[in-house]
Length: 125
Image 1 (cartoon, rainbow, N blue to C red):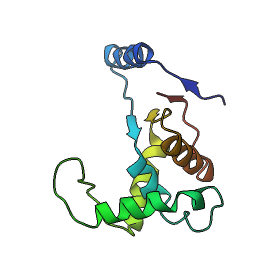
Image 2: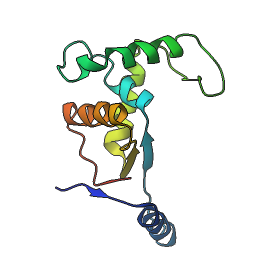
Image 3: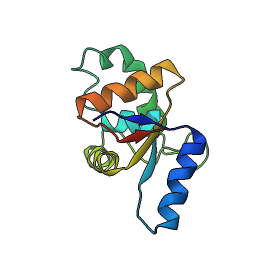
């Protein structure tokens, strides 16, 4: 199965089609934090993710401060196997997944996590 990349107008068309036909659709965004949550136990063992140890440490440091709102709010603490399980289930169940394809580090981390967990979305944005 080939993943289809949607532009913003195509994404809106998909949303409108689902609304008009009253069909459920799960559309999520996987940011760097979500990718790190899912792959938190892989950064030491995976040769690609080992290059991004600083990202894991930075996310854990920010998350473990417990900030309750704003840009640095994460809503999780590390390590967090329950958050990992729930995030992985949500991503695998999503119909359309958005992630940062422009920033090289975020893209590499997310795509590697998808590969390690056999996540192949039908559509991405």
